Length: 154
Image (tube, rainbow, N blue to C red):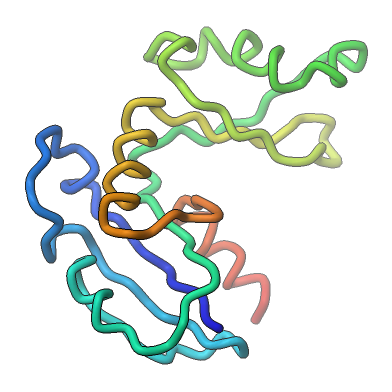
């Protein structure tokens, strides 16, 4: 089994019509169990020719599509973290919090939580378009986080 990593181009993400999934989608890599690149391509249409079974799909979005920032949550509110974070960050975001999706990471030594905020409609559209192509990502990452993780592993 393998992992399919799909990088979605910002131009495709910002496209608001139901146009065809083309090379503009971005790039993809098929990683084998050892994490070695087994295949690569451009555009989701190319993924139909994959011969190796895919057991995990990961989507990677450009960092420009989201906001990454820390949130300091009072200790008494930490058990309600998901509900509290949007209001903690409300003044730091350009869009209304009702239109955003928030992904909250683990508590950092600084006492804050890393948060990624992305337009809910943009994320929903990306996931729906991937689903239409037959792919359901198990995880979604920002490209800057993938690069940071890769750098620490070396």
